[in-house]
Length: 207
Length: 343
Image (cartoon, rainbow over all chains, first blue to last red; front, top):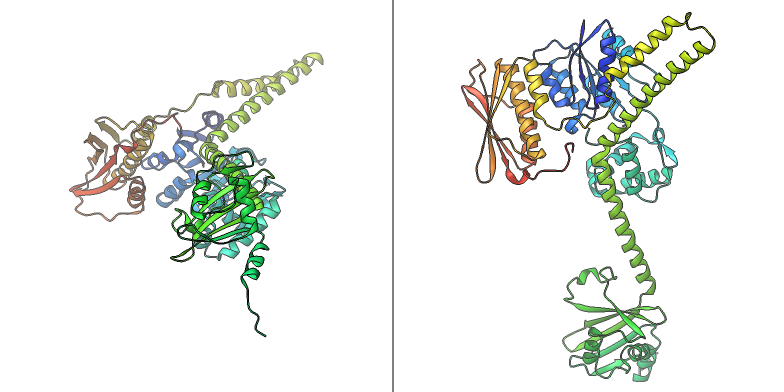
């Protein structure tokens, strides 16, 4: 049997996942926890084969950061990242951590257990793209990666000068990108943009 | 061709200046004043300038007279280089025709003082607009920060709603299928399929809590659960901090110590001793590991923990005395109980 560790802080989602594992003949629940920071400990002596890891877990602990640590010491453990956040960088971060799969709770048509089966068969299962989210007159697919960098900096409360220094570009380039972003979205200022981006959960800098 | 400038020409020139201007000696004796300045002073004080020093004092202590009002708003367009009025003084007035004027007193040299009046109605309107926008943006920024802080909670509620909708859909599907089978008199034929559907839905029901409760906000039970799972007992001695922030730091240190104790020293017990002095909690985390260590090299985990603790004003010391123990100091400043279980 495949031993599964579930890391999920939404009790109702956790119960739903546990229920699916209970129904399955291949998988058995090893443990179910709500804080990603405890996941590494749970893998120390146990025989965890698969982790279903939420990104935003209890006490604002990041499932992606926990996954990176676990993969460093236990590369054989398969990890499927789960999220309902359309945050545009999560897929890339999961790939960088070496996670084996990625599953959107609310988007896409693939069932979680199907993703688990494919991952356990050695596949890397990722959605083709991040869900497209409407931001003002524009949508998230229309932003360039540099524009995302700039928005991420704005969300973190950085000033234009700080953004220029962080991204190693000139102040004029920062202003140029911001002007373009505001033109695309139709917002009058960056604060409106940031409020919308955060509300739609397109960028979550803590994770 | 050289042309001589007469006193009359100078007077005519400054009279054509659209603002008000007055030059005087240090004691206030007027040297030169233009018509606009006298008009403005007439409106404000009821007389023209006789002594500039006296008139400036009158303006400084001006009481609204129906013809004009003195403006004192913090956002008035003052000279940013003259914040504390060290080089010159400024006063602002709105007249009955709604025009706004700025009066400025400057010491030109050791003998001459200049009072200048400039109409700033448009600048005043824009400054007022800028101030209102700044207040609005500050308010938006506050709301945005609050949103950022609660975004995970908001999302959690959304997930719950989605799960509830899923149950609702499944239940609705079963009811519809059953009703259809009864009306079409095909209950017997579809009995197996219906039973499976109902069983699955009921199982979902029994597994999923119908009433949502906020997750246990205590950090200890889950850590104890995973520690037990890997066969390492965690023993806490002493009173734990009360604030969420201090507890988060304490448990971050315990997690790191537990991970290292099990991974490198094969420990089966971790002791967390918490003491308090006047200013801080002093925490010592030791283990019963079998490995003897005289020196350790800090890896990513300990370095990240040290950075996190130091960012919050706490400190970390790694003690290698046969076995490895962590000494953590967390200041009491954190110990202000916070609202709600989740932050």
